[in-house]
Length: 180
Image (tube, rainbow, N blue to C red; front, side, top):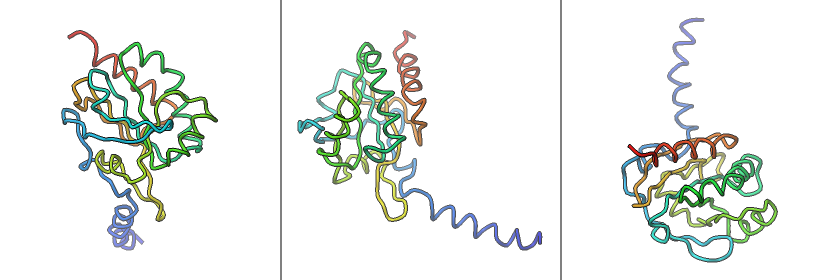
């Protein structure tokens, strides 16, 4: 029996590797890297770019899908804390592969006032190493990039917990802004 388990171990590793999301941390910008530029339409139809937000901290969060439970919790918590982000000179930008119309409906239903960006071609999602595939469905993985006012990535969050993520980002933002 022991020999059978040892023989199956490499097969189990191979299965786990094949089932892993398509993107890897190596594909993502790391802390200290210049943040990749993007230009995406928001729920109100306006185009939003990273360059437009120069001089502010940017919380660029990628999420799988509008109207799903985890994504709704995460968005509600960012909305709940929006005044704290604004006080810290930070903007929240959510990105998924959903359409502008989907974002418009999601924002209306959930009373979200920050920008959700439609990355229907997956360009920004790929640039940030956050494109993932599961059961032949492609989506944005739940990753976040905290970008400083000069456009440099200061913190990368991978596979975040929607329930605590806003609190985590606020704590890191405060630490990064603290006088040294």
